[in-house]
Image 1: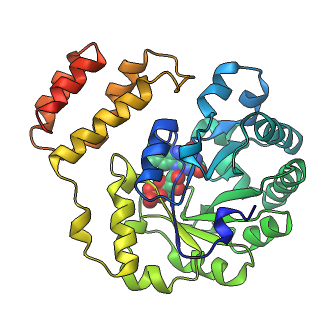
Image 2 (image 1 turned 135 degrees about the horizontal axis):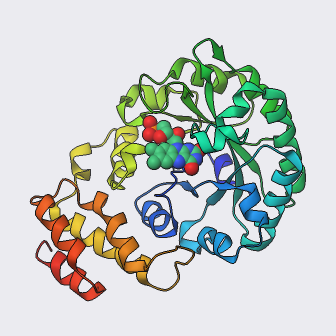
Length: 321
Ligand SMILES: Cc1cc2nc3c(=O)[nH]c(=O)nc-3n(C[C@H](O)[C@H](O)[C@H](O)COP(=O)(O)O)c2cc1C
């Protein structure tokens, strides 16, 4: 089957975000127009640990697809074994390799952004994972470099392309920048022009105007923080691309409340597994971003934290519907 990133048109993807892009969230974002989604990242060693819970948390439902599972690690053999296991057991639509996580836990393990210091090892990991996958493509996500004096693009992007990576997402910030400061769209676009594989641009995409989005050599865009609690961003950006009226995508308080209820129902449905706590406790914490911006949010938040059943939550949110 043709992978989603070869079907044409500018893609709008949900960025992988640990602690956020779980299965219920991915379902919601797909229904709001995200063309594809990516899981929260998972350590290759955790996949191979035999933990049922790890696999349960990563399980994909038909409504989320096309959906990728993102892995991180530093050992080519371990990464390919984990990728093959995920393909076999969960059949994701693609496996994505994380080459950009700045978190100390990933970097100290020589994984994530640490690999930006070693593009040859990035290539070996990409090649090993690509070869291990039988039916699905291997994709990757990188940052522009470690710090302003150590920019690895476009060289690392070319290495990844030669190593079998079939789509590359580029976050145009360095590891040193973390999540702040300007995103370097110049370097993203340079890669998109040079590479033969599709390049997905990432980094404050919501700030790009219609012309920049439309004229970009990128095959698509990946939206991160602007999507937290805000699936409407996908409708807004699609309207921007198509020249429509973006104000039509502004959610009303009642739409926010309805979405929070839907999210809680998905988390508590029994299909969503693999979390350590009670599903309602988890849902209550995770649904707050969907309600942010609704009138009286602070008071509502306090009331939500006190309730102890899904019906109580629905009753509380009904006042907005
Ligand atoms: C809370 C949070 C968690 C993230 N987790 C991941 C992750 O698991 N894998 C990954 O590749 N990037 C992760 N990122 C980075 C985002 O995917 C994205 O590259 C970054 O936020 C820049 O995009 P933005 O400017 O649209 O937010 C995370 C970002 C945030 C804010």
